[in-house]
Image (cartoon, rainbow, N blue to C red; front, top):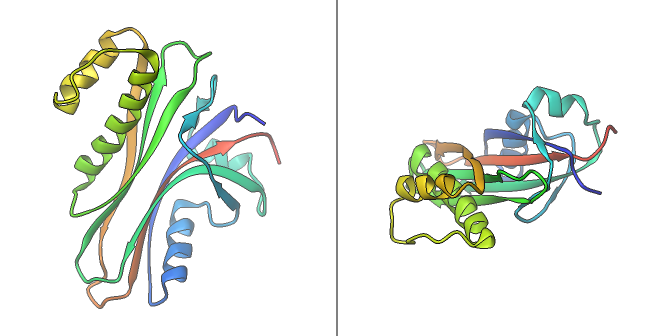
Length: 183
């Protein structure tokens, strides 16, 4: 079972109950009707990134759906949180890539998203034997990675939110969802 397609999605939910807040975040991301199974960080070879609409069209309610899921929640009023997915795609589509998830507090969307992207790219770079200075800023390393001729693209998706002002549970999710076959 190797996914041939994947898509990115994200969402936010707010509710007095923690679990219901998570459910609402999944609804916002439009993946609440699936039995989600979290998997680790490998982007399969030849796995095509498609639009959320195209990916959802191939899934049916109740299906067991694998994904890399980033999730964060709080009931602390005004607390900033993030859930981000980062992806690194190799030039050679026969090779696998990497997906990372990052969960944080106090980071703005671009910071958390780029951190997740950096994690995925660094995992792929070390696998491919690309030499780099780990102390370099992400944008500098990104250029080194892409100039190596081994990493085709990197990108991220991040959902941020501040905790509900009245202390209700607030949940953020971001996910890379795999489409294995038509259900």
